[in-house]
Length: 433
Ligand code: DLL
Image (tube, rainbow, N blue to C red):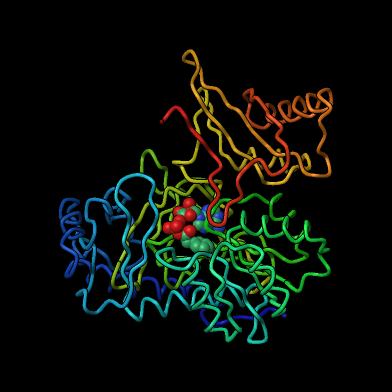
């Protein structure tokens, strides 16, 4: 039986959703015009005023916000309420430039936690569940978001935070945890550790996991589900929009429902900024229509994906986003060809390898080189050179047919690549160093 945290809104007819969105959008634009001089200036430059925004159909008239705008207005330039009305910040660990600092009022925290509660119940969670949060706590939004959602559902929450893998396993076993929330790469690592310790999937008390914060393939989902003996659900979000729970998977496990009563999604062509029709692949843009402290309007996420309004068997009516292929800034251009790390992951996992790999890109004599380094699993480990070469060739051929370019493959001994406790670092691009 499908369970909902807020059934009325999660299953509302489309007309009702659009009515809510229009009402909230009009209010949000006024709020920003009155309280965020940085965005007001952008609106003035584009010749648009709050009077021009009467419904969601007018959304396209508004200017975009980009990561650069967030850096330029660091730390408080996009704040929509007095600082004294805020109760919390979170921040991203941006690799370049300044961090993003997102602010929250108590109402903003509440709506964020509601979104996470919806995700937990969509994955089958109830107040009978014991939910271990192994996302990092602190400035990262993963820990706090799922923790708050878990409380709202009434689960017993284990705030384990990330890392300390054997302690994670001890709590799961001793407290008979039924839900695990962490990054997919950490879930894979926990699965590997359970196996090393001699556990079979049926010995593990977990029944479901809610994994996100990084791109992961369907093949990785299959592996995690098999090793932990669980159903693995995807969850999406970003700090600028509160954190996890912007979108989440339901029992159908086919795309994530975007919480449309809080966020309006658009897909644009990243080069021309033109809004693309439903079903097209492009950059995901979000407008947060009721978050007041950090009100993001038409925020360009850089995530590449598609939207669908296909009817869902779970009964939810909110639009679904496909698994993001990756970020436009993660996309590698190798010898002129676009390559997403997730495509490489698919080939590796379909050949029976685990998601312990690294992609090293370099430029030698003005030519890009692509070296895919992947660990052999303990089951297939061999030091027979002929066999290793044969396996490398098979992978290289499969990568060629997936990507259209030649890649060197290096098979490594088990445990040669460092495991990640949070977001995995898959790509080392030496051309940028
Ligand atoms: O990663 C929030 C989050 C925490 C989501 C826990 C899910 C679970 P940031 O650190 O700001 O926030 O990173 C946001 O991570 O723009 C995507 O590129 C990527 N991302 C997040 N969820 C997914 C997902 C959190 N399910 C950035 N699939 C986003 C693919 C994801 N990429």
